[in-house]
Image (cartoon, rainbow, N blue to C red; front, top):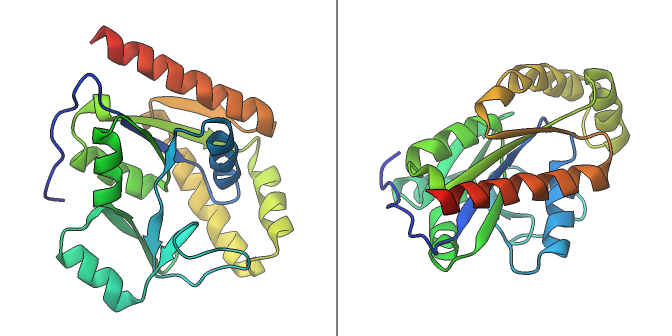
Length: 203
């Protein structure tokens, strides 16, 4: 991607990239973190997929038509974008960069493909921390997906297959956490972010 972000100032914020296989609880983890840290900012992704029950436009995602999404791509308005399960997803650039420059912690729940693209646009490692959340097992992940009642059996099989590939990329992240207990996972994410901040101050 073009339009790479500039180097981070010592007083600038940073992006927290949080990835996990579908059904592993990353959205719930993000929600808990934002409740515990009122000064943190959620990065709202844009997508061409249809909204699920209870999802709100502008809060959970920016739900766009394919034409609207393509226009953002052409305008260079996305920090990254990828096609996942037949739909397009992307991170609006302006909101993220302005929040980072204002000294905010910006948390972004994103898939492995998108996380790799973020590395290309935010080249300064001081601007981004990456955390991968693992499921306790593939069996438990399947049970969680089935419990959501939002996908067909065929779609669940496809997500499980994708999850097994995504898990292979966990070693590419700064930190890896296994989500066995939600509250413990949230605390461990906070500990990882604190370690990242401590490392930044030393550089």
